[in-house]
Image (cartoon, rainbow, N blue to C red; front, side):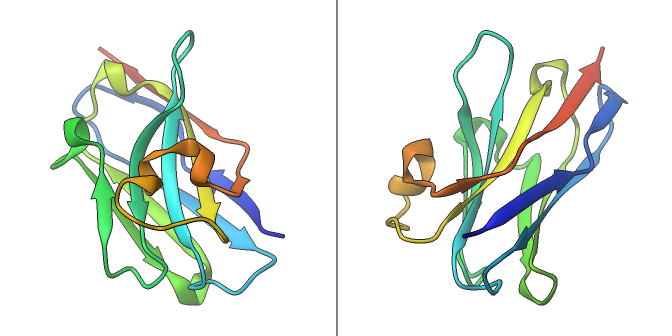
Length: 128
């Protein structure tokens, strides 16, 4: 069992930066891959980023490359999502998720059904 708690969301202006955090508990950090997804009202949950269990590889949604950066500190059981040059269209609830048993290849990690555990989400609102 893995519990995930996101934090760091809030209201910012376009062009600002924000860093989200997700703390995991219940299983040693560094033993599973982690991802970020987001969901806007009326839209499906979409892939944002993924980082492998050792932090050796990261994957991003093509549209977010260069603005979002995912990292992890296994000693703190924490993953981060640094979001720069935020746009109003980045407004969404951001969720972190963990893959404990599922596949970790580049294609599978973009599919929300691959993930075994989810956090409750943190709201990010970007005003124009």
